[in-house]
Length: 235
Ligand code: AHQ
Image (cartoon, rainbow, N blue to C red; front, side):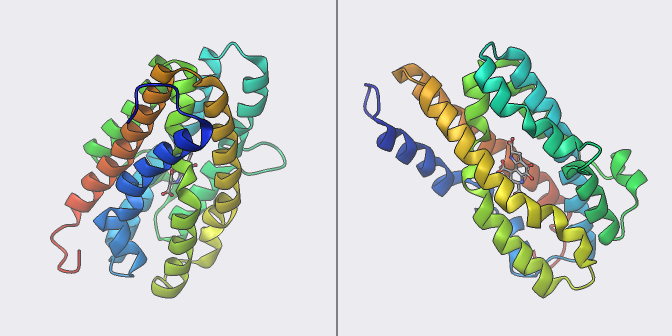
């Protein structure tokens, strides 16, 4: 990569190249999921462990807000908390994920009490929250740009759930149906902020490293889940 300031197109190209190489859509566990090769036990394990990620997203976003002195950015970013925590009108993503758990045969208690949480998932998610707490707010925002690659993955996942996992009550899939559009909007918003505020060579390189870090966090969550079910012959 060159040493000077990248123009917008080059910066976006370099960000997208990280996803093309390292986003978790290529992880063998997601490949197996989207090919319909996961057992109900492995699917339930993934739903239960991903709940720990989902419940920490608003905490991560509140950390970014608490570090950000720019009112315009806070006004744009703050919706992410209610997107997950919900309010009187909208149940929010955490509630929708609990319903996904019930649709897979997990109780709300099992998810809320993290009864199935693997150490590797806890550590990856906690590392992401701590990254948001300790990195400069534009760099923490850049780490959310994995969402540039999420809509295609979630669309493929939805199709796979409907085709290969009919035992999952389809009403539990509301989370993903809503999230495809939300992820597109989130990614556009985070990209605009990153392009505007990562406006020096070193900040652009830090944004690249933030996206690499986040891809590694998502990847290592799946490593822990994949390991737990690796004895199954189709994984
Ligand atoms: O459901 C996901 C979600 O709410 C978020 C928030 C966002 C962030 O702030 O880092 N990232 C993210 C992601 C969600 N789903 C993942 C998936 O594979 O279902 C993808 C993940 C992401 O791409 O970062």
